[in-house]
Image (cartoon, rainbow, N blue to C red):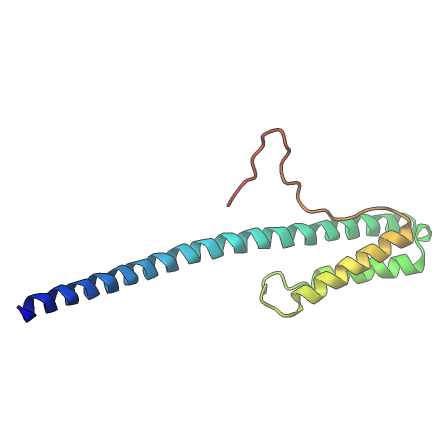
Length: 139
């Protein structure tokens, strides 16, 4: 009789371990998929913001080339510094410790240039869909 109960207890432990192992394996797969989606979303957002600043720099540099006297030397210096920050941004190395530091410098420099130019221009991110029933795209 002792043997029959021993096998039942052992069988239960085997099922518990098997369930745990299956759950752990499924969790790893789901976690990897979710991390990939979050990484894609964050990467897109960073690239979008970086592209916005690059576009501003390109427009301002074009205006400077057309008429260098239109912008003060202070503004021209700020635009050059923004261009350097955009180029220095480690796009292919997202885990680089300088990522946040460079982006903050870029944001501050952008605000300073806009203030010097007397323009109200700001980066608000990608529009999130309207309230007319449009759904956000989920990756």
